[in-house]
Length: 151
Image 1: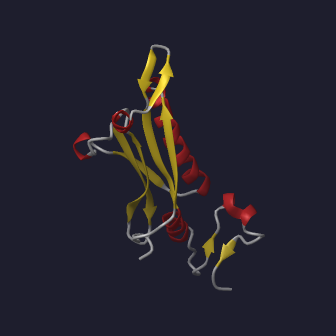
Image 2: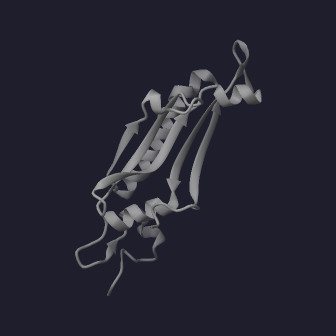
């Protein structure tokens, strides 16, 4: 189905920062992801990936999962990672800091996999009559349409 496709569009966020800023920016990436889902009114949960399941280049990683009524379970919709200096050290990416040059920290966040967000909206806002209510935050983009489906 459309939830698991080989090709899809997504919005990614990347941050290169000093080591001192790394933890704060990681929290900000999570707030960005949660903010999107809260504004859309989608039920979600945040899962911290245990250290045994982390890739060697990741220091900390969360998956953000949205509730899928059609399957009765949560499905991954976003993922964010703090790779600290692992990637930047190999590439020699540095920043001038108070103690001289230091290797930057890299962070990334899949802020939105567009097809999965669409599926989550369709599943969570479907009515008993088969229509889909558009989340209020999207109304201004819908040219007056607040519900789609059979008339």
